[in-house]
Image (cartoon, rainbow, N blue to C red; front, side, top):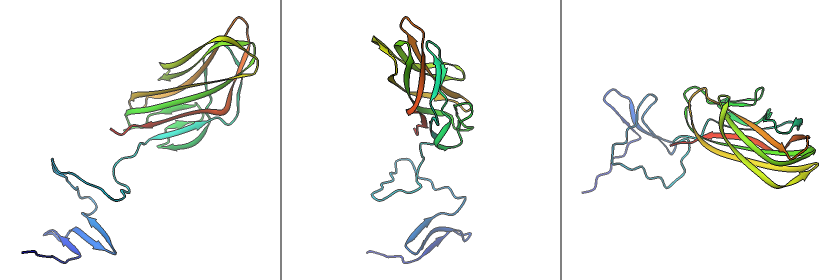
Amino acid sequence: MTAILKVDTIQDTAGNNIINESSDTITIGASGDTISIPSGATIANSGTATGFGEANTPSFRATMSANQTGLSMSTQTKVQFNTETWDTGSCFDTSNYRFTVPSGEGGKYCITAHVHTRVESGNTTGKSVRLTKNGSFLTESVDSLDVNLYNTRSNHQQITAIENLSAADYIEVYSLQWEGGSSGTTNIQTESSYFTAFKIIE
């Protein structure tokens, strides 16, 4: 025998809504309630999930408002990412070009930096982009060139790392080009240079 129960609201014995339907919107529970899914049960979604689950935040993307010029070769130089494309959680500081993990947001982060450099004088036989954590070496990507590149030649270097970070840990980006037998200068170009990271949801 099939039974049909037709109601708009189901309440508990204290008169609190458990399930309510209004204007084609179904509300389960009320503010302060905990909706518990028991072990072994499965939530199957064939529709659109909105505001459900977690997001990969905090996250940010930073760029440069102007070229960083007159840098000496063979010197590690912090890249001056001073402009934000976005910043959820206010985790990036454009005054010291630093990403800091906010309070309560420790975990695994995907970090990427891309640096576009241009040799203005002299020549170079290699380049690197480095990530530091709390002021100390973390990891870097190094490219040694087979031939010297002379005058106003562009180089691109990128690094991506997944790191386990704690609240208050901070990450910075450094760039280096080393010379091949002569002194010179290099610039960091705004074009294609960026620094970004997001928290990985596990």
